[in-house]
Image (cartoon, one colour):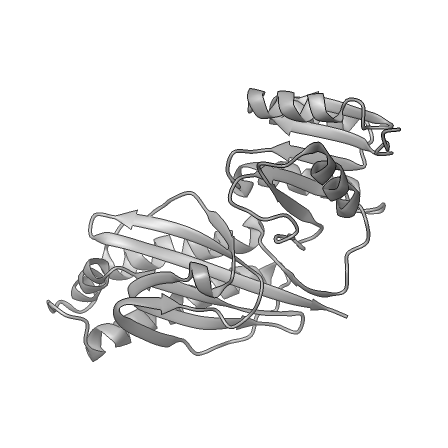
Length: 296
């Protein structure tokens, strides 16, 4: 006998192939109901008129930012009840690796799943969180860093940076990001710790330095390092200001610099890294944030 999932599920997906796979897999496994919405407009209508235990979001890539307003709406409606978990089926992210804790949970499941994996994963999503270290990967947290990078580099070096698609990955030695010069700064408060890294391509770092001070350099030297350290400090300060307005209470910190062709950027905390790549006329920049929260 097939074990039923005694949950009411709202499936939101504009990926027809993935939607069919999910619906075909779950129709006989859901004990209450599974309702399908093809887009955010349909999802809002269905969410306003019905109660759900879990939201299942089918995605090709983890583009969390495009669902930010709907995420906030679902959590506000359930503020006085049990949190409404989100399970996101996406490529490139391992099951149980990512939990968004601001204010409630989102979990990512890697594509390639089978029905038993999915059912167990959804059951775990509505179970109480385990004690220990979890990772915050939230558009509400990363957006101030994106805003700070764009505004600071534009105002201080007249370089326009264009953010690309976010990438989410585990923090481990096999997937370290490499660069030519990087500014790294710790992020901490009473409830979490982590780090931010600005990883510059050499050509971009030299152009940024040149525009900041009016002096051309052909190699990364101590002057260029000082400029990147100053930028790291200012970008972190701007993001910290915006985040503290919404209650994060992030403490001041002092940046450090790593340089050398192809150096590896390693974050000291365990958890999940959210990386935003930026392109420009002069080279590439990757911004990484890792936040770990310790639950008592």
